[in-house]
Image 1 (cartoon, each protein chain N blue to C red):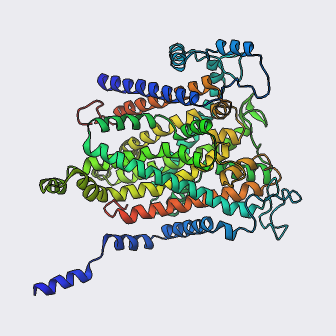
Image 2 (cartoon, one colour):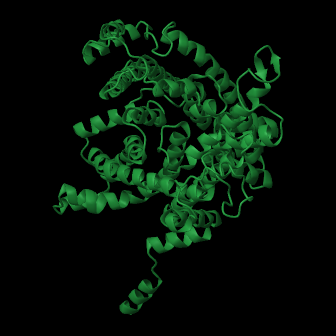
Image 3 (cartoon, each protein chain N blue to C red):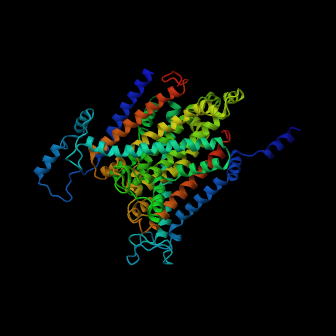
Amino acid sequence: MARYLLGRLLSLIFVLFVVSIIVFSLMHAVPGGPFDEEKGRLPPAAKANILRKYGLDKPVWQQYINYMSHALRFDFGIPFQQPHTTVAALIRKTWLVTVQVGLLTILVAFGLGILLGMLAAQYQNSWIDNLVTFGSTLGVTVPNFVIAMWFILFFAVARNWLPMGGWGSSGQCLFGNYFCSDWILPVVAYALAPMAIVARYTRASIVDVKRQDYVRTARSKGIPEHQVMSRHIFRNAQIPMVTALGTEIPNLITGSIFIESIFRINGLGKFFVTSTLNRDYPMIMAIFLLIAVLWGITYILTDIAYTFIDPRVRLGARDS
Amino acid sequence: MAADISTKATSQSRSFWQDARKRFLRNRLAVFGLIVVTFFIFLALFANLLAPFPYDKADFTKVLLMPFKDPAHPLGTDEVGRDYLSRMIYGARTSLLVSFAVQGIALLIGLPLGALAGYFGGRIDFVMVRLIEVMTAFPSLLFAILIISVVGGGIPMVVLALSITSWIGIARLARAQLLSLREKEYVSAARALGASSSDIIFKHLLPNALTPILIAVSFGIPATIFAEAGLSFLGFGVNDPIASWGKMVGVSNAYVRVYWHLALFPTFAIALIMLGFSFMGDGLRDALDPQQDLS
């Protein structure tokens, strides 16, 4: 276990190193910096001063080392777009919104997804099963910005039931700025695809477990059906669901660029787009590092979760 | 007697591909997918003949016409007065051009590199595994956005950005296939007979690894259609005046309150083409992989 964790951690550090180099060199590969004058005409002395302030007058490798040594202390510098704050503060502010969207989406996607998958498996090959299977095909295949647009067309344009966008800014809320009517469309549109995946995984694994000998044995011993379901079937069907959870969570908490753009939610995803358009190096770098760290950590946590759910799994064993 | 048996055996034999075609055509959803895909390929190929107007012809006297009002513009016009039906038809061309080009490039780069890594192992494999590790560390769409923000938009650049991220998937698959296939008896037999490494890879291993790779490509195409539409939707994809469904959806966002048609038609086209390709891919997988559990 310790050996495994050490290996994973080393791999994560390697990935972070490569990602930072790729992003850094890509951002510096092209002519044109953030202070190239298009509108404002700066005197050369003033421009040199600004470049020195941001360290842009040094050679690229020195800028990189300088940046990384600060980044290790969680100092990601000053964003070019908003010089009066720091990158870390700006990310914290926008990520807070994204995490709200993500957590609610996870709740909806996994709650409903597991429920639907269980229903489909329970009534296998009935119309419920067919409906869930068809719906999950749609949810997985149709891109979420398309579904989001349909939601807007129907619920906001054709019927004036829900607001078109925003996050706690337009519409009635349950508490202060939380749980507002404008939360519904983005969360549902965002949740459909992971919900479809979870429903599929749940159905497939329950259908698989139901055929196992130990389930038949449990039934023949006279154990009540709900206990067979909860103790024998569902417990073992959880294993593939952890895989689904592990792959979806990093996606959901780093936010959807599409959902945030289409519903005008000021989260990390939308911010990434504006940062890229403005070539805001410190911001882009920090967002990429954040995402790589989050993905790496959830990967490790998923593996650890396996060992809890399935005692047969041993991390770091020779054969795995 | 012996001749009798052999003629009987040959008269009943069916090739793997005949079997696969039969299985595919029995699958109703797969056939539906095939029809949809054929329809869009037809639109893309003959866009210049089918479209009533050029995709970039703007008529400033007919800006933002609603659909079904003007017989000359059955789907209305967009915010600068371009015929929406024509732009929808040309959108199919953009979408399919990008996705076929990206998958083609991914195959050309990923297949040989993955095959070499899987067959020879050693240093090539080490580098390949590290590359895969890095590329799977976060969403490939973010990488594509970063690359396009550096090199600029336009169809060739979108193809470049998406190819860089998608060849890894093919390489990973080819590597895994060859890793398991190279231990088979027929490979040892071929080696014992003195076949060279390139003969073993190209004549024995790759043909046997072909079906899973074919299936991966058939799912890679809708994934690329989604990526192109997504990039264009965000403003990182193809440039004006080239028609792209994703960009049409992105632009429509500002007009959607009144001019609903600007959003509805391209979203419908994206959903339909994605469904068509994935139904076809599912059918292909079921038809080409008869060993799998069909529960």
